[in-house]
Length: 493
Image (cartoon, rainbow, N blue to C red):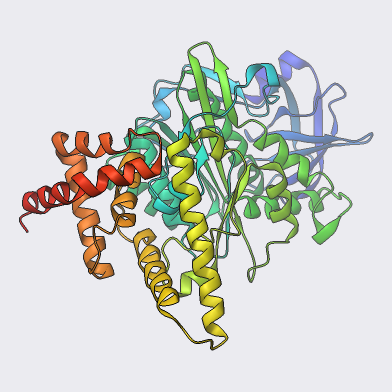
């Protein structure tokens, strides 16, 4: 961008800083300035016009540098745009697309895009018909998601949300899709750990990490999710399926509340401004499944919200629930019981994921949910001290094994066809008489064989090429024992 003098000569309008309130600068003058326009201070700092009043303009500043009253300000006659391109892949950047990973300057930025474009209309959208794979057994089999779905990730701190998100990102990058991770007001050490983890896994070159630290200016933190969505839209327009993770939107709401209170906005519920719903809804509306010049492409959006003491009825949480296509709830009590992931299957919702399933997957999902429901009822029945007959014992024993089956601690990436085959093997009692640890061990060996042996991969994939779950179980009972034996021989057992 040009310097202060060049913009002043170009627009011939000058303003003066009247008051400074942390991230908000009050500027007089600039009679033709527009909302969302970029202004430049004579110190070289840039700001974003947040609102316009009769006597002054509110400017959101992007740096921590202190601006003195009396400082001159010039218009740029430009809205906020960021440079985007394939050169962003593998980099850690701030909301202005400046590298913060101590690497080389970013190359290959082909165009500049506005950070607040209108959401695509209904004519530009397509129905969600393709299942989105997370690599998490419980989600893929029982609470399915679709490409282009907006699914809220909900739960308290330290309940496994980050582990779920990293596993999902690994699964999608290994399928060749692009991932954008937005860390909103995070600790710099946490951002560094995320980048190092994905670099170690060898997938950093297929993703962009857009992050702001808790010590960055409030203005930069506010822009983070919008900038991340703009990057996702660029890759979508290249014909790519994109996963966007917004971690987390409750922090974003708090920083937006701070900006609004500094801007003397009238506080509403919990002191949030009246337009907090709009601020988040206009972002979520930009996700979905779209028609592009290069074919069908999607932005699957996973916003994260942090609950307090298991309360699902918080203001920001319920706002986000109402503007997304479902939510996955990470339950603290399940986490303390040792379940990984600690997703509560009956408090989680997927509104469009089931329409992506064929008959086989729908039957499998229905079988899982009905049995888990029966298992929960039996556990409640036992808590009342009732006598346990053999049927109840069998149900509880099978339920414990299913919970162990869905527990994933190691970061194995499991494709959907492998997940379906493993569950069918389990449901067909191929592991009957074995304890949970032995079952998990053989599952992971099967996963390793699937990923490394093309012959075994073809056999497992063929198991799911039926039109009903009962037919699949019949094939598994015939071919499963031989397949498991082949896997164990291959692994040296």
